[in-house]
Length: 349
Image (cartoon, rainbow, N blue to C red; front, side, top):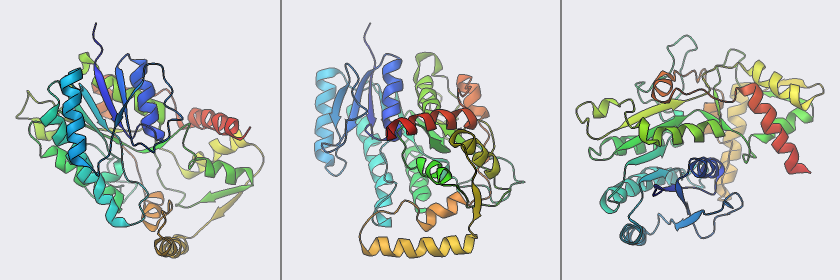
């Protein structure tokens, strides 16, 4: 039986490499979309193939996609996971919009068997709740992003939603964590030094998704028997073109104290709670951001990122995903933190 072919962009990264794992596990013929300079550390699977992706050369990309369709029959699935997250200049976030739209248009134009175009978006596209007493975020929540990254994801989503003929699935993960993400490990390293850093209020509501749960859910949505996915409002009059949007968390809400307690339980020892007032935190981040811009380098904890990290609530309703694939996460934050720390410790030995 012929395997269905899937192209995953951003395949060498944290989320992308786990998407590759999950696609291989369900028996798809997987093509890792990578740049020539991309690391292939986590792309060592037997039978894995590579497809060159250079969004800055659209004519070459179109030529490559057409040639693939002619020789191999085309991709059944395309996952647009590649994204700009830490640019040297804010204007570079626009690439998230331009490149997503470009790949979707080329997919429609060149791939005769395209069944689904999946965009890995973010809850940042709709933004956090301003009030912990507000109703949870849903797929129908209005777009209210608070960061340039979130705005770029919003605009990329809107570009796809404007394509009537595109069979798309938009996935909006909350904070993703798990093995291969070294940024998340900074919190653990601080706790090992006895520092329990608190950035938001004690009432802040956090949400998370373990990376393998995210990757597995994407593949479940692509299975043949899951084609009757919950429709987005855009597709109510276009039953023949499946279009859907799903928010994804582990279904739980966590307070900062819970988050810290889970980390302390695996790190061990005692830690002193260090609270940084939000005005001071924002002031420091703006100074670091200005310095980074002068030096033309990326800054992970930008003022915009701080707004997300200190937002009142990321509480989210995942009813739509549960109904589509009977989604049951394998990891809660407590179990995920434990597994992640085991991986992080292995990296240090």
